[in-house]
Length: 159
Image (cartoon, rainbow, N blue to C red):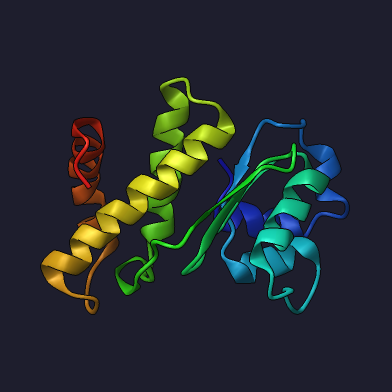
């Protein structure tokens, strides 16, 4: 897992992607971090293309976070999740997502599958927060506290 400051540090290293073993990491940049990693001042509007091209070029799984989050694999596969909401747009929720993905990796899921499931569960927990507490004033800990329920609901087939 590479998130937040790890991504910012990487972006300062010339040809950083060549220093990472292929298909060993999940990178979880938000658009600002993605711009730094790509060495550009702007992102193309097609976030699926941006994430997929980066994953293929860097040979890593990329989770480009946003209202629409894209999970892209080095083999060109991608999954788009449009389940974002304002309760997820607060400091620390990216850390919750990174932790969820890391936990799924520790349980033996592949990089891509852990990233896709982590994004889904994170968004489900975020939706619970929005529904229970509203869209404003929520904290990352509110999302974290609802992850177990999101997992339980998925296992039981609830939405």
